[in-house]
Length: 83
Image (cartoon, rainbow, N blue to C red):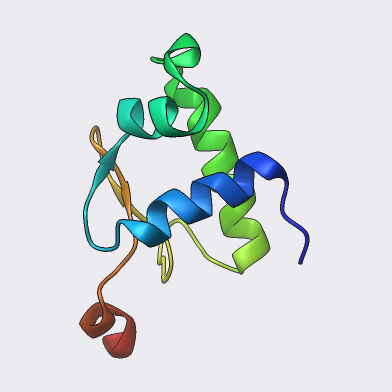
């Protein structure tokens, strides 16, 4: 699997902050800096591409969980083992 630099940075940010919900704005600042803040559709498209490469489904995710109107997080070990 080949990730773009942005997909890789998104995966790293979610991975080093497991279980913690990272808001859209926080992810923007960490990945792109303050310039692109507020473009939720832009972030969603990168999450969608990353999920596709991971074989993850938005309706039944294993790796990237969505918290509507808040942001994204990775599951904890218990959630992963149960799925």
